[in-house]
Length: 542
Image (cartoon, rainbow, N blue to C red; front, side):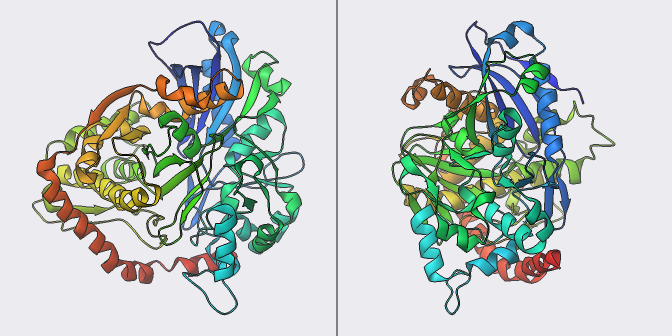
């Protein structure tokens, strides 16, 4: 593997943060100034291993990708000497069981993995009465203390741990600590077994009512059915964990006093890079997608699976609504339908394909000539938590073209975003004005305009939106080093363009949105019959 380094026109001679952004598709490393300017970045891909409801990655692949990408950046001696801190942002809801020496016990369980559905269901149910699969007292306790509750799909850390506890007892017994991807990276960087208050969140075992003292709750740990000793110590995202381990510093050629700041999971880091002001909404368009906004108090909408929970910003909660697959729909279209990466595309050519898709989709009018796409490739989470939902094209005819199909894919994600946005805005009380767009998908001018037109909300495209994770991680490091305060960040954020909704398309997209919601209601029973994920999960435990 040879990571290619991309350099920015930005320069300067001040201190730099080595910001690590581990996503589902791979590891990106960036050199970022304390003011949020990305000087250079490199990316190394990582395989996603899918077998039915089993979705895993190799933590060793994560680390090798990090060493290649960061090593490529650190070859520049002048810039290497300016690196004062390392700070990570990683994909969320991954589970890495490790032994006492910090070695992974098997592969990491991905946030897409649904093997834990049956195991977590046993923990959610009450003895007599159940509400949406939850015992009322259990649900009340989870929501009251944590702000949320385990996902019925089994896709979060609680579901993963429950699965290992019930179905892989030998692996459970060998586990010293259950870590997230962020925790695993911090362990490899510093030797510390610890978790941030946002990385531990979806294990659903912490009392989050007072952000100044987030702590484990014995009753919640008992409900999950695991031992407290298998959970790491808690830290804040801005805490300095210590210097790099000598062997890591030596391998990268960094100074031994280079510090590691705890960092955050991807949604927290993106929120820091996108908008830290209260009630200011942002939309992340990556493999998955989410809406977020910082708020001063914990909030929960149980029915629509949304909550405001601990995050990287001191004294603030991050309200979230999550879409399981967003950009993954375009990568699926690229790799499984239009191209085959092994036969037609080299690794260097693949990033350009998305711009080709944008140009093709722009050739057809809004509405994709009546074609509607439902983007549920791997179930959905908000505003319904339904792992059985699947993607599909509706109203396809002989008159449709690939242009229509590609635009329908983009509009389908936008329709799903509007589906999340309406209840999210009601719960949070988002500030009026543009929604900040970040992530790889937000690089697309066409997609930003489609989302504005479909949702009826202006979309503010940040400068270099794909770098939001890395910039957020650098800002977290700067706050941890006392070089910045969170209140300083609004003045440092730069906007590339604001996309205003086309009012002439309002009636068209209102009609499409109504059809989109009707299709979900009508097809949900069919999907449950075709995709009995509960049975699959039971089989996985057999």
